[in-house]
Length: 152
Image 1 (cartoon, rainbow, N blue to C red):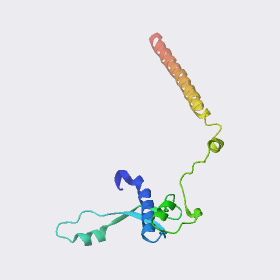
Image 2 (tube, rainbow, N blue to C red; image 1 turned 180 degrees about the vertical axis):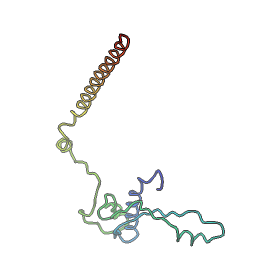
Image 3 (tube, helix red, strand yellow; image 1 turned 90 degrees about the horizontal axis):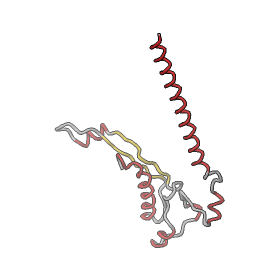
Image 4 (spheres, one colour; image 1 turned 135 degrees about the vertical axis):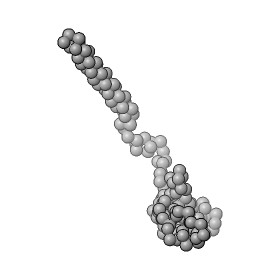
């Protein structure tokens, strides 16, 4: 989790929510808090536990509310497999829900979505033209300065 894998911390916390619910008759915990505890290495001859307790630094990796977080609740299939009572439908949270039909997906789609790539190309073209004109003006100014120095 620490280092390059910190983005996995919320997912691990969601897993812990589901795992707790499985082990406690389907009752989810209120929240899961993942913390990183760090301390410098103890000097030789000292008690490592006392040194750690005195100098520890705490950093929160993830804090998840199990009732609100998407995918932190048990699936109905898992509840049935383990003999747990079904949960009310309104307690389940999903991060994404695809519309059932093609027509519903098309209705939610932004009508201007196909125009964004064209707008980006137009902006790039305008910037390229401006850059070329600016470069030509700078080169012309340098040439004029060089001619003025030659004549003067």
